[in-house]
Length: 535
Image (cartoon, rainbow, N blue to C red; front, top):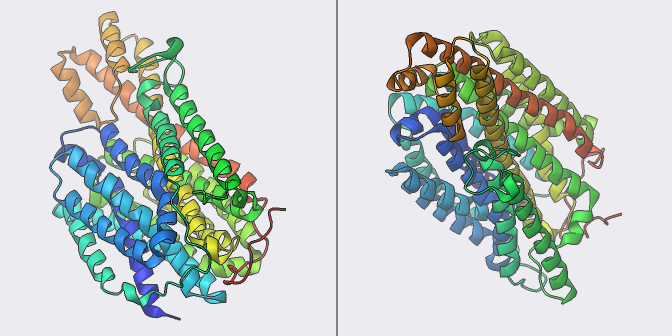
């Protein structure tokens, strides 16, 4: 086994996962440092995943154009620049530029190339093991992120994590020549610029609609910039995104008919195994990022833990995710990928329900740790199967494209998971708090009207002491302030429970995507092996 190549790929995989985990446990500190709101930081986190999702397929094609190792190298360099800017960021805008944009662009080049380079540098059983190992490395990133990020944030500043990322990337760049990059045997493809624009615009528009649903509302407009036909614009914006993706599909078919290189060979999506693998990649990231948005809010906002304390309480998921990701390939040899993924989804469902039962004013440490441990086991079993399943569905010439599709599905799932959970939690908080205030006899009619007007401008998910300070600044009577705080605290818990219930429903619904997963471990085809047929 080429250990240097494995180390380079593992380091790149690790650093790509690390800072997302750091951001999720540092939300409160980011809000304080930039004098902003949870919703704004949520938007920055979502935008990072959105940029990657929008550009991942194009990044895969760039790898075909300039070579996978070169795309990997350029992407790492851009990523390092983004990390440096993030470490030095002085405003939310500079944070978004460094983390969401530059790091997102860098990752869009690195991750598709990484999947293709794994398939190109390892053969047979080694390839399946390396894909599982990289799943474990991703789990290690999730493991280290909350603890490292929490400790550094609590004792120093979250910025040091990004300085460390720059150093890791620079060290990785010194050894990229350890990666073999076999030359293409077919004609050099051209970049479908129009297709890239349509694809990116469609994904960006659709996810933006989901992201804004928490403040705009789904049907009844709430603080919306425009109100088409008297309704909230959310569904119209999402529909526009789907329309752009439909135009993208039509454009790709047209290019294929003309004999020109499309951005995506749509016929590959007819391969059942590939389609099932991509579906699971999307679903598992929606669940993971959705829960990882909800749980830090519960720990930091409701329980009042700092970033390090939050990381410690999330440690069980980190450890079990790492272990399950690394043992998943061995489990799949005995049970098959389909059964392994189904077991993982069942464990995820149990984890979400255990965590839902734990969302109370007083945390039960043992029961919470059990839920987090189950979450890691379920996610590890699922994620350990996807790389080899997806790469095993296509031939050597389609490796970068398959890698781009996989990363697009994963990053789109991450963006949708964060945005959807944010929309569910914030929307539920606004609705629940509004209804509670409207029926609370301890609140005067004047105060109800003031709360209603305030909710129309949006609601923030903040600690009770901040809510109390806002009520005091509004010069509300002490008795009414206590009643409002009780309603607000109860509404927070109900909103978080609804978010975890949605995660449980998604885990159950994910079963439908497993039907076409392979029942036995399939190794990715060699250079001369054609991809499976779409039958």
